[in-house]
Length: 85
Image (cartoon, rainbow, N blue to C red):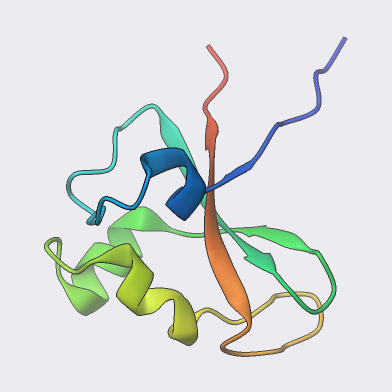
């Protein structure tokens, strides 16, 4: 039986601390959630680190997120989920 993945907004989970690509725990899966259509899409952490740097604050990158469902840019937030064991 497959469990449904439970996603949490990064900002609410970390309580306002500024997470970076490098500091985000390795057991967390990084994704984006579109505020327009509600779609949750995966974010490639290594590609994000290569393009913007490992020390870049994730909150500062939210305007660059683009929904893979409705193609809306700048209306998404980062979300995280625990990776399955």
